Length: 117
Length: 113
Image (cartoon, chains in turn green, purple):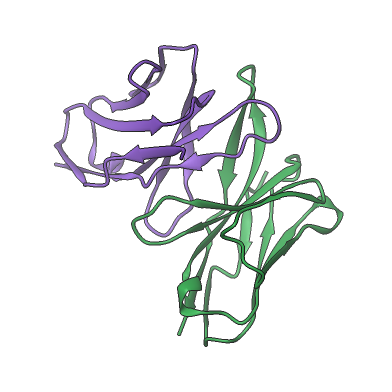
């Protein structure tokens, strides 16, 4: 178990460019989440996949954002026509049900930090 | 609307003392409250969770409580150490489905030697 892997760790881009982030979850986890976190705030939910199906998208996920999880393995988050307000840490998490509790426990990656100039 | 709130002000505490962090929720009843630790530039790491029908959970120096009357969870770190300095996030989740975790803003803890 190598944990949740995210690439790239840092991305600096100019406004208007497209960027793509990749997430490789823990292999046994069938649930995958994307969150966005800005300085001084907690992670904000963006979208969720169960296997390859995208089951929920937050209203934070504008038309410029698209996420995929082909074959239920890795996932990509693409931001088109980036804006300065997109600057944030993009966190990916995969999850398991915790023991007998039935609760969904998230394992996060280290995040991909986006800076839009 | 549903809210989960943490004291956004930093908490400074002397080494060896007990740190107590607060998480309040309004307008909903989460089935679970979860606590995560986040270090600068890193993703959050799960620490402990408690169910709504549990009053208290412990793990080593950590203790979490869940008071459904006050709509509040308290997170305690006993015998705090400088290595405990980090931001602590409270998250809520429900039952059924995929149980999305909704997070508060986090509280930054600084343990002073």
